Image (cartoon, rainbow, N blue to C red; front, side, top):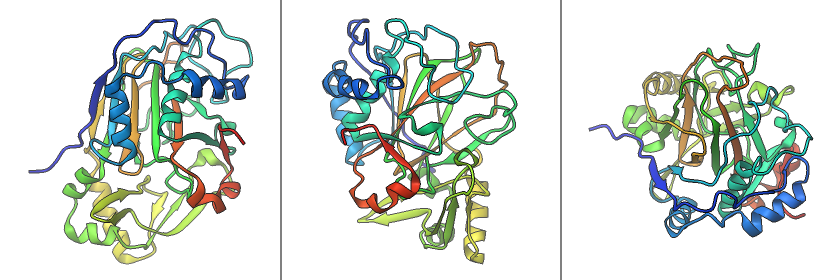
Length: 324
C-alpha cells in the first residue's frame, strides 16, 4: 500500500492576545526584532510544541507540522502589493506579531536568513500573488500551479526548515501540498529511485534570483545516509540531467508526483513548518483577485548551522538575521 505524507497537527495552549504587542519591526529595526525574538519569541510555546520542534530538528517524526493557536493577530492593513520588505511606516500595535512568532520559531530551530538576490535579503518574506505575474510558476504566480520543490534547492546554503505563516486566507483557502521523501519513493520504481541517488543531476536557481543564475552540478535528488533518505527536488526545467538514465528517471519522477502530496489548509494565524531536508512543497493554481484582501503568507528560511557551507555563503548572498 502506498504511503501518504504525514503532516503533524498541533494546537498550542492559548496565550494572552497582547503577548507580542509592540514587537519591533524586522524591516525597520532588525537588531531590535532579533533581540525581541531571542528573548520573547518563544513565550507562547507549550511543552508539546517544544517537544515537536526538538523532533523536527533531529529529523524524526512527520516532515511537516501544522500549528494552530499561535498569538498572531489579524492583519491590520491590506495584503502587500509588493514583494519588497514591508513599507517603512511604523505599524499599529500587533502588526508584527506574525514576524515575532516566526522568528521565535526560527531561533528555536536554528538561524533565520535570506538571500540578497531574493526579497532584498529579508528574513521575513511576503508570499503574495502579483499582478502581471499570474502565469509565472513561482510564489508570485496564481494561474499556474507551483510544482513540488524543496526550497532553494540549487544552493549549498539551502534551508533546513521552511516556515509559513498565514496572515490572510483570501476569498478561498488555497492548500499547500506537502510531499515527503517516503511517499515519493513509494510512487516511483526501484530503478528510478536508484538513478535519483546518483550524482548526475544539476539544479538551477529560479527566476526570482535574477541573472546570472546559480547552477549546482553533480547533485543527487535522493540522498541516503545511515538508512535515512534526504530530498533535493526542484521544478521541471530547473532540475535536469545530461545523463540519459537521469533524464528517464526525472521523466518518471515528475509524472509520478503530479497528483501526490498531502494538502494543508492554513487559516489566518496558522503556521506550517516543513523539514526542507525531507519534504517538498507545492501549490495548485488559483484565481487571484487583487483587492487588498487576497491570500497572504509570510515565509522564513531557517538553517541549523552555516559552518559546513561557509565557503558558499558570500557567493550565494546569504544575509543572516543573527548577531555578527
